[in-house]
Length: 260
Length: 333
Image (cartoon, rainbow over all chains, first blue to last red; front, side, top):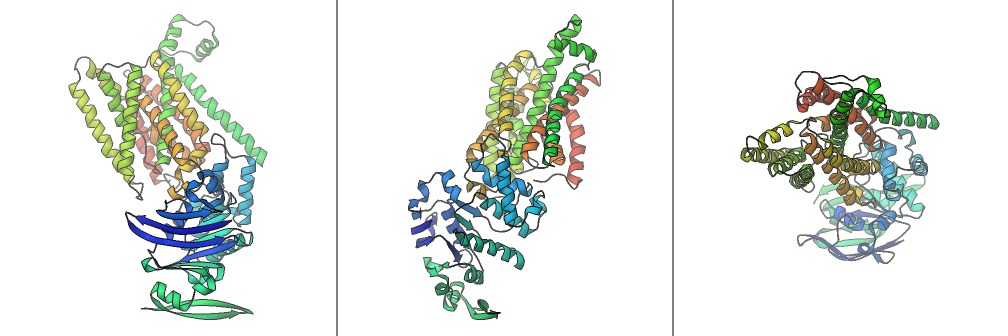
């Protein structure tokens, strides 16, 4: 799948949030979107998801603009995961994930055994099958986030869009989330996520979009975009970029030092 | 394991159907003049029974029990829908002002001398108007859903004062008593003609909600997320809210304001079967019918004079609700 963004702008009451964005992606790929608070990262992904209507420009999925899709068709290949901790469910894990299949289930019928089977497989894959009959409201933040991930993935979308998926999670749960993203990429999917952690972008994405003040932005391969200079400029800080060695593997790390 | 579960499910389903029928049949026997159960069964079988009992059953008891069943299914189901729709455990026809709006519609129709069909339509129109006003007032964009109850109370009291206005201008000898009597909540005056109009409409609305019961789970899903699920959530919302408002309005047009049932029955069912509407909807209908029929039977047969329904429902409802709020498994959503 190819996603092309052409001259994309979004404005609230004539106040532009972002302007004239241009970039394109081809699956398999992971794009991380970086930028300071309030720069419009969330607004951008909501535009890509069709939750917010773009003001100008084009969002093309395999050459077809987002506005030209039937909702049902569009959301059969695009799925969304909300920021961790921003969503709750009053149902059990199984019932919550089943709702992800709602568009495929006859409105007047209950889910079939085959639907439940699909959900069970997805829970198995994400390692939360044992939580199946628990209430989501009783789970930890990390477990709940995995449940919502399962609900997003159960339709087997080609594109997954996530809003700060690793926010509010501890190290282990962050890794669980990011590893899932990695696995999806290796299966040929296109993943787009917002993050406040440049080091996650470094490790897990091959493309980066860095949003900056005054409608400036940078887009490109991760190594070219996440540099000391760009981090310092975007976040208006002084930062150190170093390397950590674990066994034979080198890891790049970024440490924020001081405010400029 | 799986087949065992299926067997239990079938057993529960049968129980949910049989229990209201048994209770209603038994309750037919109670009243100022008690009729033995075997005579009631004979009556339904078409066997001859005493003329007096036959008349009582056909003209008094059966219309009354059927109305109680109808309202008992309708108000709790409407309460359940409103609670899920607004993600608020306190949302009911009463707290959202729908009951007041429908009462005003009904009172207005009585003032103008409309027949029962007119009263029901008027009750529905004003009920729907109320829910729209309450919805617009209470659900400002990106705001918590708690304000909805506040809005409901405000809009409700507005329509209550309009009801008072109608009463004020009504003829004190003829119209006022019938409005007052009607608003107190009673199944006493319901005739067969009323039922012929109301039963089909309410049954259709309940059937629609029943068929959509799995899908109704989507109502509580996060606003933005549900948009990305590829379902027509707006249509679903419209269908269920209109159906819930219709059954509320007809209940009120038939029996006046019967408080509390819309609140406590759904919560009681939640404590029994959890949050999944696939189970909640049938349980709410069935238990609502049982509850209402029993309450009405008590109301008409405990004392020489009939006790208004709302008095009984709040006597039971308020303590029960306090218990639910205090209990660990109680009110959530």
